[in-house]
Image (cartoon, rainbow, N blue to C red; front, side, top):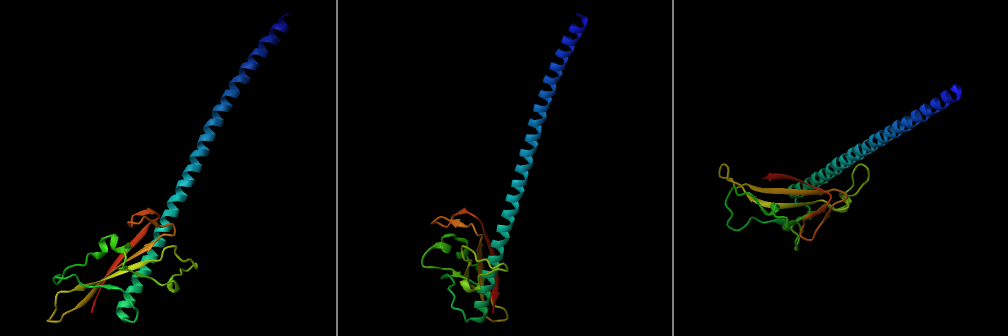
Length: 185
């Protein structure tokens, strides 16, 4: 009888121990699953940040290309470009402002110059979904030594591959990059 009682008591202790082990294993499984989920989310966030940085860098490169295209066209005067004239009544030293109005970039008639497709290819052979554009505005510079100087302000925009805009020019997805320079003769 004592042996049977000892066996029953040992069996109950073994069942309780198995219940505790099962509970501990389940808790560890939940903790490990949470850690794996957090690691996957962190990796995904890191990938999204890297992709955004890459898209922004591409847009910046396309903007630089458009700026160079318009600068070369103004300097060489052999490329037919749209040049916005100096506003009536503008005084010497007045900075052009047409570039700062978003509607001027999307309105018809066009006030911007689009880089030709033949010049749009990066080192990897990619062509942007939206071609980069530039706006050239005439400036009246303050005379130096009685010389009237001619100047131009050039503003260029480059776009990421996923760039989309609304009819009013507002960005709905993607990114754009802006660069600007001034040339004087």
